Image: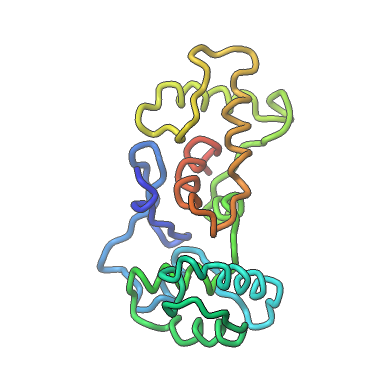
Amino acid sequence: MSSNSLYLLGALGTVSAAGGGIYFAYSNSKLSATIRDKLKKEGYALLSADDSTNWNKVLTKYNEAKNTPNKRFNIGTDTISLEDLKRSCESYIDKEINDDLYSKVKLWCTVPRSIRERLGDLKFNLLKTEGDDDNSGDKSKWTSLEERYRNGGNNAIKDFKVDTQSGADTWKKLRDECKKHLDKDRWDVDYDYYLDKLSTWCSDKK
């Protein structure tokens, strides 16, 4: 399942398995009227006015996106101020849902979440990425996931293979691959892709 088909909903969404990945779907009849409502349903938190740390982090990323102006609210390469960004968020947050605008508001007006944090928000219980046994490292769960991955068909993580036969420590290879991507931030070009894959191969679903 491609990352573009991954619809991320919060507690009000409907969760089902599709192609081995995660798929969050909802009825068209229940679509929110505004971007604000949809963000709330999908479990995103809007940046609060006094959250200076995250506002400044987002502003830095926004101004770094000059070479990809289609990701920004206004096409262009100008450096903007924090007040400019806040005004843009305020002006768009209560607009009717539009896929392109929604993606921009989600990227620039909500609290930044790493893949690890986002999966936690979505109630996925990530397996431990340290330790060598069941108590300290979820060994049996990783071993089970490794076997599933070996027979997983088209839902593999790109550029990653497990050993053709399982051994005493072969499960660690999958664990280490998961660990490598869990802290990607949402501006990473592969964020949505690994959000999908890690939900399947790195978690014990709640």
